[in-house]
Image 1: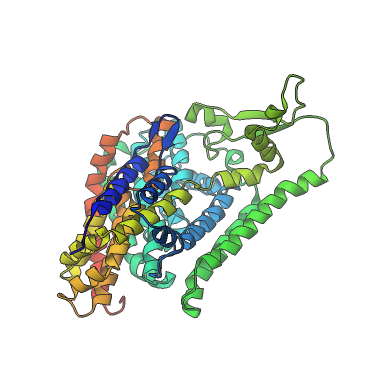
Image 2: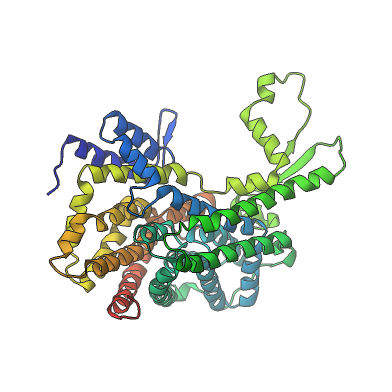
Length: 527
């Protein structure tokens, strides 16, 4: 039994409050406490109260020798995110969505199927976050223009994003955390999670189709889909980015089989750097070769979502394109401080490097303090005895292969909605690798390594599918609800309906995915 003291309770309380603030941000005086600031302030508070030590901070950044290396996870996630965002900036994903919509024609049910498959495939190749930010605005625009109920299309796309993200190592940061902690390579991961993902995708589609059957029109009047609105803006960039992303994925699949204990971020960072360098050159070279002019440069800023054609942005988002005039001569009344203000400096940078600043601005930079902060907080919980207690509890429900998979999969799914899936995965991964968990399952099995593996992959299932209960279960869910309810104010969807629909789908797909995983673990071909 772990020894708890006052510092243990302080660390647990601070952790719980931090998670709550990440889910429900508040503003105290002029300081906004959210997922970017709350974890960092929590770490400072624990350090000031000596509830956390400098060693906890070091392990939360550089890792503690157990396979989880926080900075490596962030480099991997950001490298792949930059590659995907760079491809999206060329208009390639928008063009693919146009082809899908065009193929559906006037059949509402064919379009439902097409958009479902598009969301699944893009998620499998990129990540659920990327698809939420790219496909969701397109669906909102399309359903509004066609004057049809958006709920079937938006909900099914969201569900399959959080299911297909299980299939590949890079589909969700939670997958990376579990895989790195257990030294699982990309091929081994995909071999085990591929079939559960496929089964869950099929089950979700069938349930969604039955659930929304009456809301999906048999025939629709499709909106005008002009090829010029959806054309790829940078064909060379689209090819270049796709080749770099494809090459990084191939290396992720193959190199860990050749080189043992290889840090996979090494395979993705060079490609991200090459794409970033090309983007900078695209900004610089035309400017260097274009003749100078005294005319002020006009920079067109994208509408709230640049995935929606500019001609329809006002109708879809309530806001039209915004134009900013840059580099105008300073007025006589303008002070030196005004000319050197950060906002003006950013505008000047935006003018000189429009594509580069747009690309970098879309990176989820708030994940940096959030991830490092949560890793440090979990390290503090571990050093203060809480992780050992969780490990002991999880060992008690892992008395058989079936109980380990179904119980931990279910507990993780529920815990996502109390903690958010990223901190939950960090905490549970630590617990499943804790000596208390190993000691606890020794009473039930002699092959403790296999039982740990079963529990860890069940954790992957729960960490992904948990986002399909409450939108608070994942960062993708928080971004999705912000787009749907706040930015675009979609009618027919609210938080209660979201939860009610999710509770029809999630228990079935969770049971299906866990059942397939159980069958795989019982088969020598998948162990």
